[in-house]
Image 1: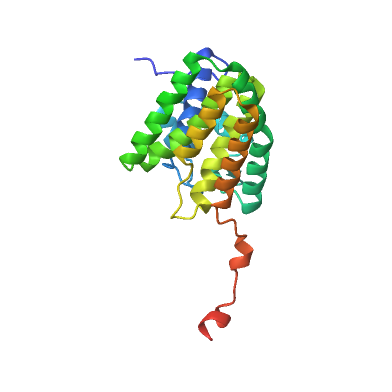
Image 2: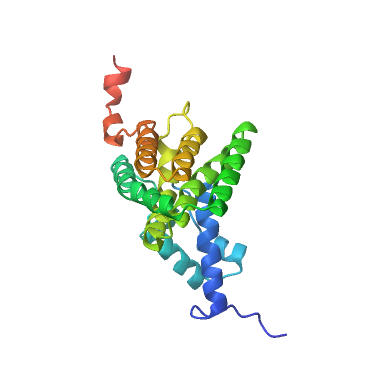
Length: 235
């Protein structure tokens, strides 16, 4: 019986498997099922997706470029651990592009898009009511992606997908435990402004929303926590 062969890296089937690995890892990060610092073993991922190590490495390298996976020499690939400085840069970038995204969304508003946004808000509220934290986190990110899709600006959409994935890691690492990751009320306010085609209000709502998310993070540099045991135990 002939041995089963895996697709070559440049075949359509190989490309599909690379995409499935990327999407699977990204979804697990967005839902906080994969924690920062988790080792991403090539062999194990290959078994899960029926892919060769070459395809797994290709997918992981793509995620490295997106900033959500890091590769350490002689140790392998890990889910990235963003620093407080990384977090500030990510939210600064989001504040730069998302107000412009909602501008475009106001121009593109239609009954069909409003229906999609309303249904999405309903899903967010249902997840919140049943206490499904993973679904809430995933849906929060999807809301911002949905608005970017509505804007019709493919470049901004690509940027934002990467920033949303990084934001998920940042929120997981630095969010204060008594605060929500991304409030549904804020999203409802953004949708209301888009529905009215009120660009100024939509921009203001989005900026306020992103600023509040960052304010709810405990962005303390790790070095600030370093202390001598003698200073603590000898006191």
